[in-house]
Image (tube, rainbow, N blue to C red; front, side, top):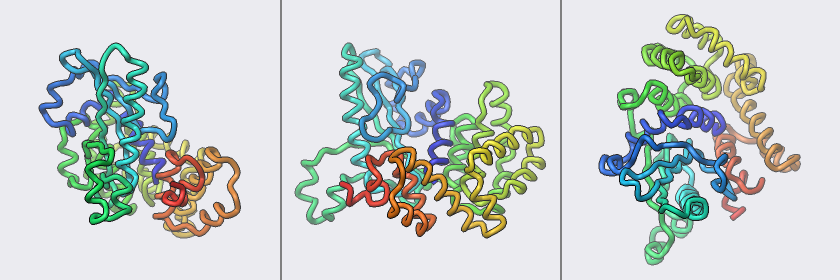
Length: 336
C-alpha cells in the first residue's frame, strides 16, 4: 500500500542525518569523497521553485561539492512495485530540477543525481517506456538516440535480513529498511517473530528517540499495523514482552490510526476475515485520496474500486500521488 510505504520512508529518510547514512551506503566511495557532507540539507516542495509541475519526487536534498565549485541535488524515488514508468519519471524530475536550479541558483553550477529505493517483487525497470513498449528488436536502432538518464538503485529485495541489519546506518534507518523490505509480505505470526529478533534494534531506536526527541519507533509501530494483518493485540503483547517501556507510545499510535480510519480494514478483518478486511481498508484509503485529488468519483470508478483485488489496489495507491488525472490512476497506458 503506497501511502504507508511512502509515509514511513519520508518519516525516516526525510531526516538529513538518516538520509546521509543511507546515501553513503549507495554512493561509490569515489563520489562520497567529492561531497561536503556538512552541507547536506533537505529541499523540495517548500523550497521556492522546486515544486514539480506534474507529480512530486519523494525526497530532494542539496549538498555542496567538497571543492566548493558546484552543488548536487539528490532526488529520490521510492517504489514498492515494479513500475514501467520509472525511467521516464526520473528523467522528467532531473530535467525539471536542473531547470529550476539554473533559475534559483544562477551563481553556481548544479548537478542532479537520481537514486531509487525499491522493494518490489522485481528490480526496477530503467529503460524508456517507448523502448519497452516497442520490444528489443524494434527499439534497438533508436535507443541510442533517446533521452536517457542513469540512476543509482538500492533494491532492498537483493539484500537479506542480516545484511540490511548490518548496514552502517543509525538504528532507525536500519529498522526502516528491514521493515520496508519484509513486512508487507509477512503475515501476523511471522511479524511477531521478527519483533523478537529485532528486539535489541528496537530498544536502540527507543534510546535514540529519547536522546534526540524523535519518534521513529512510533512510526515503525504505525507501519506494522498498516503493512500487514498483524493484530493490534498480538503486537501489544510483543511490545509488553520485549519493549514494555514503549507501551504508551504504541497505544498512542494505535489510537491515531483508529481515529483516522486507517486501521478499520484490520479491525474488520479479525471479525470477517483478515484478507477481506485488508482489501476494504485499502479501498477506503484510496477512495479518500482520489476524491481529495480529483473530486467526486464517477460511477465507473466506484465500480472498479468495488471489484478490485488487493494487488490492483496497491498499484493504484502507488500511482495516485503522481497521476495527472483519474484515468492515469486506473489506466496509465491509455492516459498517455
